Image 1: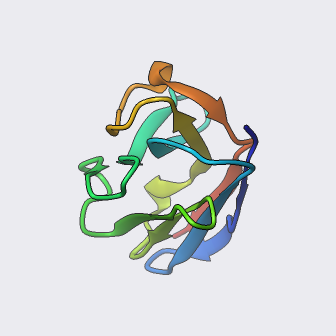
Image 2: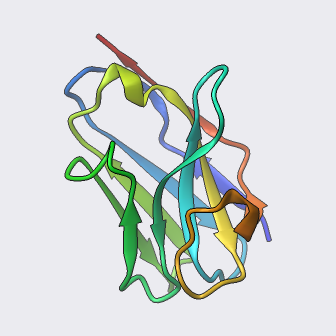
Length: 120
């Protein structure tokens, strides 16, 4: 399975970006992670196989929305009210689980990452 992210870029604080992840085949649970320079990779949002159950990190609740389209094998992350501290490389990931997971070790497939930079 291959995952390809798109949609990253440079945006001013308060702006919006939409990240997309295209999978080469069917997936089960999926998630978005991010890694800032010198910091560990952390979960941003995660989604169950059906899309009915979602997790959001406290830092993005109310600003980010994760969604998926199983017919198209895609997943998205709508990011609103962006802050400079959201600056990171964002990764799409897929797991063999049906429920969402916040543990990076549970994810078997990773995209190459897309840079998101939020200027103040």
